[in-house]
Image (cartoon, rainbow, N blue to C red; front, side):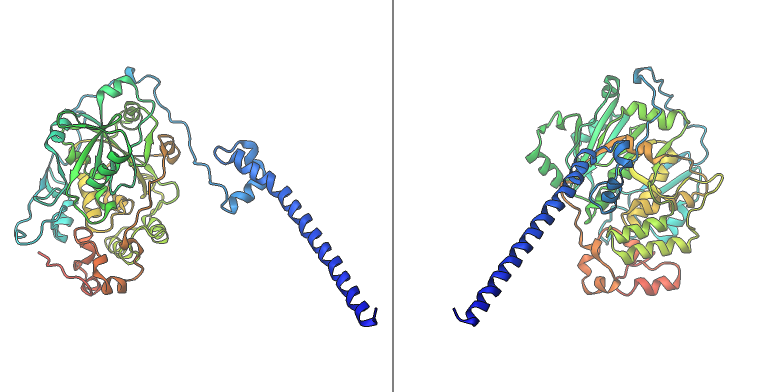
Length: 464
């Protein structure tokens, strides 16, 4: 063997030995990584759904949670409920008679001078009418949706059915985002006392018919379990989220004979007897309206920033709404001795007695949602602020709110082109992204000159 060949053979043997060493190192590293990962995966599996105190003390658990591999547990606390729903005494229906203004609230269903223009569900409320609506008087007439020929029509058999409903648990599903979830722990007395009404649009009804066991006939109506489905024909808005605000905020308009209502969002499964809910949140403290405080935010401006980060609506239009509220004196929330514990609610559960005052508040709240963005958490605190302490309500702890229901995921994600808009230029280039029947106040000249220039760039609406 030549000297060159011998050197080549030695070099190859040396490289093979190095290759085996590298493979051995990689194998040992893989085994070591698996040994580290298995306890971590076991910890996630055992502690992921309902972490025990031992899990919470584990440092590895904290690291996994910090990396986003483990969902945070929902903060819940026990609700001081009565034990027996049948032992609860229901107050007289005229228990609100001692309240201050208003005594009577009626609704504008047709705007004078607008007959030649397409009807809008929320009407053509002017800035002046909006300003007057916040001034409480013994008799008030305000915009409150359902203007003539603007959509949101119930079937006649449903109208007849809801006339008998004095106590209502209401919910709604629009654009097929959810399916009805049957409530739990409902007592026999509540099954007899309450109407469980699920408001749906045509698309959601079709989805439910194809997926769930729906019973339907012209006499008994449409049912899924305990829920009576109420079809709302001819959706008032282009935006599904905005359509969902109709039954949520205008429950008293859809069900005018109801004395009490509990609203829950369509993705929720109610876990607490509704009669116990009314006793805890209304009757025990002589309240007419109850809603939970937000788990994180207390200022509407914080909530607005969060909405922009999560692309809940067009960023420049959220900014426009907040700028108007600032001009009208709405300051960031701060703790006051007699003020609300927060300006931002968790709007997925609303508990109310239907009185002239709560009905008026619901109308004014809806008018803000109709005029600006459909993000109702942004306009709740503003509406309270404009009533200047004349609307007392109970804002209960968020941990109790989380104990009222089980949250289910949407069947699919919300998707709307307006939610992804980042600048006004995008709306100028493609005006089809602008809603045609809602949020008109975002594109009407405001009473301050600076806003006239802001809005008139890409949309004009005649002002009365």
